[in-house]
Amino acid sequence: MKTFALHFLCTLSLIGSLLAQDAKPTVLITGANRGLGLEFAKQFAAKGYHVIGTARSPEKATELKATGSEVVKLDVTSEQDIADLAESLQGRRLDILLNNAGYFGPTLSVGKGKANIHNLTREEMLNCFKVNTMGPIFITQALLPNLKRSKSPKIINISTRSSQLSVRPGKAWGYSVSKTGVNMVTWNLHGELTKKGFVVISLAPGHNKTDMGTQRAKLTPQESIGKMIPLIENLTKKDSGKFWYYDGSILPW
Ligand SMILES: NC(=O)c1ccc[n+]([C@@H]2O[C@H](COP(=O)([O-])OP(=O)(O)OC[C@H]3O[C@@H](n4cnc5c(N)ncnc54)[C@H](OP(=O)(O)O)[C@@H]3O)[C@@H](O)[C@H]2O)c1
Image (cartoon, rainbow, N blue to C red; front, side, top):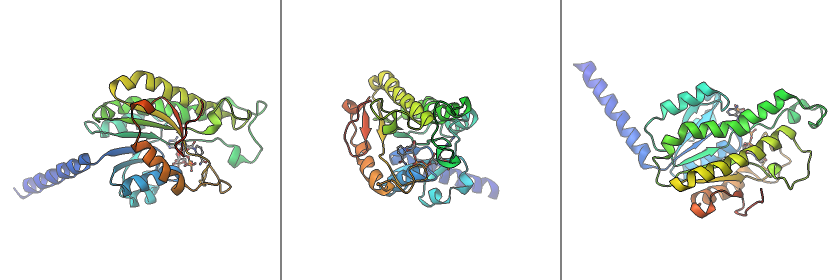
């Protein structure tokens, strides 16, 4: 009898906490354990959102946990992780999906100079595509049932000015090509989903001081995310299918 009562109370408290989460707007941020993803998690949580932050190694995501976010394991290149994520979120509403996890390539860390047509490898191009282009496609696909539960679902694909066809060529091959790819993902999702009430955009955060952006960057994540969150919150149907800059201006594809 005692065990039954305990089980009943635990179930009640679980239902209570799920209902409390459901009352808040919910945002899921990939790659939320460091860099821009972590700052997004901090600022969304501070604004009263329920934040689901993903990390490849949740056990090491101490700063993310400290934001009060729900932390979920996700390698964006893993079919199994994506399927597990979708299953764990079954029946729950998602208002904003922020495809933030990104991979720049080895040019920063290996120190052999910039990637160029002579030293590019298939493996490296594939790594960039798997994280930066295919990740957002298949995470979006898996989480569509959750997004459809929202009255105004938003999909935000974090891109970069290096993806633009008008920038100086030859910069970070795999990164720039795969981010141009994610802009087309935005465009296709916009084409398919706006009639169902979705807003889908690409968003370039500017050059930020993170592991990827290095300390040479001008912007701090606090500054740029302080501008991007109100931008995301104020998006309406007419803003969908566009490439936004963190400061609220529109970039050419
Ligand atoms: N910083 C800039 O100046 C800048 C400029 C333009 C665009 N961006 C874009 O902004 C986004 C965030 O960049 P950032 O500067 O915060 O980069 P960062 O400091 O290098 O952090 C990258 C994040 O992505 C995660 N990630 C990488 N590969 C992953 C994978 N296979 N599965 C799941 N997560 C993975 C990392 O997780 P681990 O910790 O497990 O590696 C980390 O959480 C990226 O899309 C980037 O392209 C950044």
